[in-house]
Length: 282
Image (tube, rainbow, N blue to C red; front, top):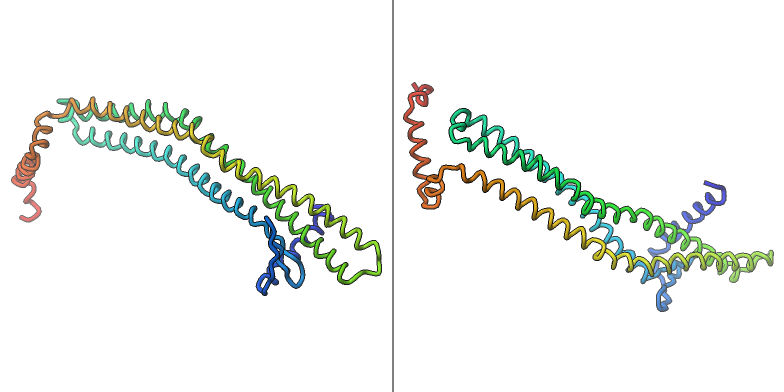
């Protein structure tokens, strides 16, 4: 940081401290169309209600967009985790059935179906999801640091302007022996005012435009998200429907007729009748 920049930072810090101390006391306000001057014992703090409103709207957008980015990434991670878990449970079921499952091949067909879903469908959707959903959202969020820097710069210029305006007021109330001080202070204050008002006007004008652009910008990503979810669900349903044809049709009929519980109870009773189940109590 240059010496000039360091002095500005120190002056801004002093102005900020003065504002915080005097804000706790009673203040009279002078209101015009946009700005309010808070009269204090040391300086007048400029408050721009219009800017404050637009900044609050931007903060709401920023928070929502960052959350959307996080949840969009979480969805892809969850999709991978789910299909990976399906693959593991299919492998376990296939091993559990063993040679018994090889008779009708149902456990093998199920394992193949979920492995294909993981290997083909999810991996095929990974690239399009990143290109149409994740990356556009991330690009949208990538503008926020620059906007925050612009807001920070505007606030710094406002502190400079308030401090210089206060300096002019003091020189008017208590003239200096150096007649050049007041004209120089007035020029500095006017220059600071122009810089501040230019930044302030730009932010007040462009922040609403950014907020209004969020919908047309994100609409294609939302449509892509719906289509990707539809494709995944459709292919998952199609693969599971293929497995269903290898299931025992009697089981489906018993389930539909409410007799499956009876069948399960019969199997459990057969297990209880085995001698091995009573060895622990003998």
